[in-house]
Amino acid sequence: MWYQIKSRLFFLLKSSNQHGIHSPFVYDLITKCLYDTNYYADYHKLKTLRNELIQNQNSIEVTNQSSEPVFNSDNQKISTIAKKSGASFKKQKLLYRLTKYLNPKSILELGTSLGIGTTAIAFANGSNNITTVEGCENTSDIAKQVFQKYQLNTIQVKTSSFEDFFNTLKTEKLGLVYIDGAHDKKSIIENFNYLLKFCHNDSVFIINDMYGSKKMTEAWDTLKNHKAVTISIDTFFWGFLFFRKEQSKQHFTIRL
Image (cartoon, rainbow, N blue to C red; front, side):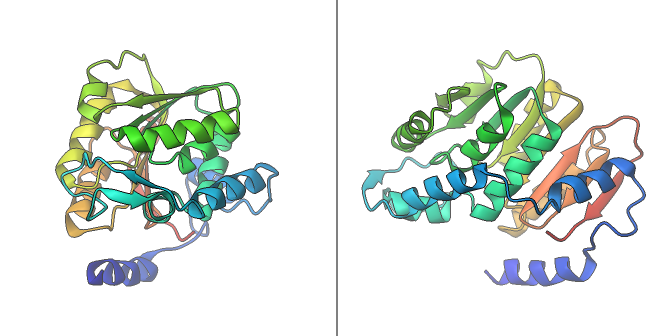
């Protein structure tokens, strides 16, 4: 906890907004997407489904795939999972806007959890394909119920470890990759390196929880310094990685 507090204070000292951004791509991304204050009609549905899960007092057995599990015990209330592992309403809205703005044709999410973040992507993405991977069968079953209730038929749920899923991955290119289910340095770097071959010039990788621990921050530093990454954006709770070859390598620290 102390590491996160210290990291947050340091982030606030060095972060900025759109002023002084000279890259047209990054400036437009910030002003037209990240800072977009419009209230979209889908926000109400996102908030409703999130609240339904937060109020769900049923319990399930959770299978931890990560070397650094989020929960201390296997038996967890759905409400607890929604609060601790699910996207906040702020993150839901941001995922929605980012997906709508970039309009990626093929999307991969590592770490479905209850599907709170996945639904935000799906509502914004229309008919494009979304594949989401969850290692815990009971958790993915709840997510499937959510997707069915809201008729989100473009989402394909794969109940599998990430490693086993990678062995079956045959897609040509990925427009958006959301890495939300890896909480240790080694796994994040390995996931990134494996999926890099599926990215294209306009792809974006979203890395969650970079300041969850010192090792997570080290992983983020490794990724943003990778030779394939040209633009990296640190928003504290998420990191964005772009691969636009027409741009020189730049790093931005942006308050949201």
